[in-house]
Length: 389
Ligand SMILES: Cc1ncc(COP(=O)(O)O)c(C=O)c1O
Image (tube, rainbow, N blue to C red):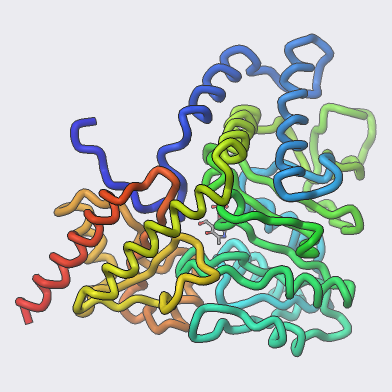
């Protein structure tokens, strides 16, 4: 492309993907695009081996213990629905936070309409949830704490390990939405006492859209909320209880699993810490530059400690969407504006009144030149606004 966009929307989906992801998907689907686990011919067995290898890769990646407890789904929304509907029923109590994405909020609002009591713990002025505030809300019938590991709006990483300890001591299931953190920062389901870890493949795990999954710890009992073909024990009338089939339904997304396989191998090759260091260096450069730009408001970015590479801002006097349009049309910069599917975050920040904010999401393939272009774009928009006043 002559004029490629400057892509700073990696919190929505990572783009581009590593060449390894594109290459392996293409090769694998051309040679092994058959239904795994359904038949006994060699190609089918080999396809099944790739699926199993990917379960094992991801289980190790999240420090799980049993690859069969790593189940594939469409994305984290799908996993969160399976987890929350599989754990909660009328009469139960769930605790969540105001930093959640609609992938957690909406299933819980739905369950609230069916007799589940739900509390929302607010985040503090720096964008963090206090584990003690969660502890204070626990009741005898609290079954689940559902937590967004890192905000897709302001980038703050929540103390999931501390919250996990509180939950484990009380026998409450901690369901973590790792959409923004899986593949960005290390996650250890055992050390952090995460009972169900929900992830999506198309963000920092460097896979394609349409593949995700969850790791379900061995002591967790998830009810079936769907049923269908599994390729094994077809005569059985009910859906299988054993994992991974218990939480998988119908033909899997083999192409997506192949992409996830290559994406995770690429991450392991690069090293999560090296990628994180690169992204946070660029984030720091962006935030420093924005702090020095008159007419820009940053949200919860006083320090980058406990943050991932996600930055929220507004240019004073403009609605978020207008700033985004100018960045796109005049500067060829792709970012995400609006409420970011996390309306309560914006309500708490007060940005709902100006239709949200402008979010930059930095990824492994961004460069200093991209950050300089973003800073130049925002500075020009802010300066033009100052003149217009
Ligand atoms: C924090 C968070 N949760 C959930 C989701 C939903 O991810 P998906 O659309 O892949 O299910 C996203 C995606 O933006 C997210 O950022």
